[in-house]
Length: 164
Image 1 (cartoon, rainbow, N blue to C red):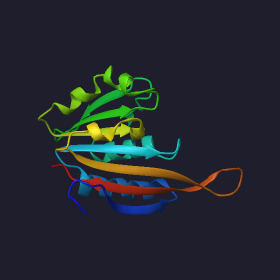
Image 2 (cartoon, rainbow, N blue to C red):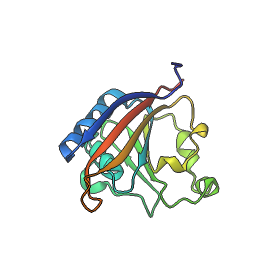
Image 3 (cartoon, helix red, strand yellow):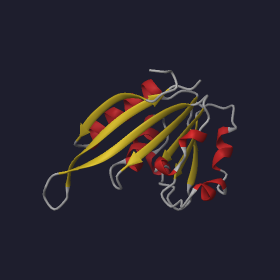
Image 4 (tube, rainbow, N blue to C red):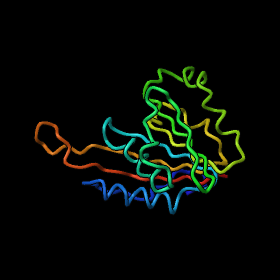
């Protein structure tokens, strides 16, 4: 497999927040670098925002500070050790032109250690992401229990793609 291709790192069924926290701890320890993009995709209500909140806590950002940027589109945080975190929620975007008007691409023009977390990343053309940034992709699927379409658990798949 080529160095620039996405590699499947893990796939787990999660039944509670503790198991999700374990996955996010693994993301934090093994996959966050000075220039990282966390791409979150999957079903509505499957855990994308919750995963970001857990990761922020693990990185030292207070849970009370972390809000979903669904309406603001973008929130910026800074950890005590100097990591900048830019959190985007692209759910409301209609097309790539909407993205262009937000200043989204400007966040990649930094030399500072930065994590860019993007919910609803499937609304973004990944071909335009900078090649020198590590890409971490978390995909969430709600697995139905069979009772009134209530999910019994979530399936989380982690992919990683090294920056050049």
